[in-house]
Length: 434
Ligand SMILES: [Zn+2]
Image (tube, rainbow, N blue to C red; front, side):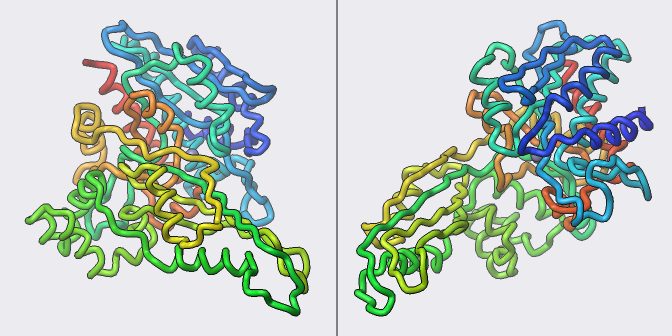
C-alpha cells in the first residue's frame, strides 16, 4: 500500500495534462487501466475530444447517499527551464515525489483512488456508494469538467457529500500545534470590465477630457481606499481555533465578538498580511489596462479589468454598485463578465465533525479548523446544487510550501503522501458506516 502510493503518483505525474490544452483523456486512461485490473466499474464522459472525465463506483448498500471523492486531473502549465527537475518526470528522490500536480492535485487524486481500492480489497461493504470522480478542466474554469458533467448528467452526480481539494495542514502557522484546515467555503468571483470613451486629440494639445486619464483617476479613487473589514462566521470560527495557539487572540476568545477580532488583527499587524486581509475583506485586483496607439495621440477609448473576490454573504449586484460609486465617474461603463457568489457548507454539523474526529485521531494534538478559500474550486458547483462539499487533504506543509502550488519545483514528501493516504482512507471508511 505504502509503496503503491509513491509508485502510482510517480507514474501519474508523468502523464502531461497541462491545461491548456488539457489532454485529460491521458489521465482517464491511466486510471482506467488500474480500475480494470482491480475490477472496479467506471464510466467515461468526453464532451470534446481529449477532454475526458471518469467516474468509478464502489457500490454500497444504498442505506445512505453517495460519497464523491472529487479530484481534477489537469494541471497548470510548467515552464521546464524554470524548474530544477523535469516537471513531468515523476522523479522520486530525497524523500520526495516531484512534479507538476504533486500538490495540486494529483497527489490527492492518488490518495482518493487508494482509499477506494483499499476499502474494496478489504471487502468492506459501505452503506453508501463510494464514487471516485476524476475530472477535466478545473484549472481553466471547469467548462469541460464538473460544470459540463453536472449540467448534462445530473443523475450520475447526486450525493450526500463531496470531498475535494482546498484543505491541508500547516506545520508552522501556530508556534506549537499543527493546524489542519478543512475548507468549508470559498470566496465568490466577479470579473469586471470597465470601459470609458471620450474625444480623441493630439498629444500636444491636452483638452482636459482625456478618457485614459479619466479612467486612471477613477481607478485610483477606487483602489486607494481599503475595502471594509467584515468578519464572517467561518472566519470567526477559524480564528477561534487558531486562538488555541495564538495567545494574543485571548480577548477575542473571552468576549467572542467579531469587532474584537478585527481590532486584534489590526493591532497585531496581521491584517497587513495579504492572506489575512483576504479573509476579512472583498478584494479587488486591477489586472489589465488597455488604451492608446501612439505617444502623440490622445486615445478615445480605455479599458480595464478587475478581479474582484467576494466574501460569503456578499451579493454581486451590491458589489458592482459599490465599485461604480467608488469610481465616481458615470462615464465609466462597468460590466460583470463572470460572476459566482461565495459558496459554503456547514462547519457546525455532522459531516464536518466526523471529518474533524478522524483528522484529530490521525494528527494528535492538531487544531482542526474550517477555512475559507480565496480561490475557486469545483466544490462550488456541488454546493450550488445543495450538496455539501469539503476541501480535505491530510498532508502537512510549511507555509512556504504553498508557493509551489502553481509555482515551480512542486513536490510532495513521501512521508506526507503515505500519511495522507492512510488518513484519507480513514475518513472515507468513517463514511462507509452510518
Ligand atoms: Zn487544484
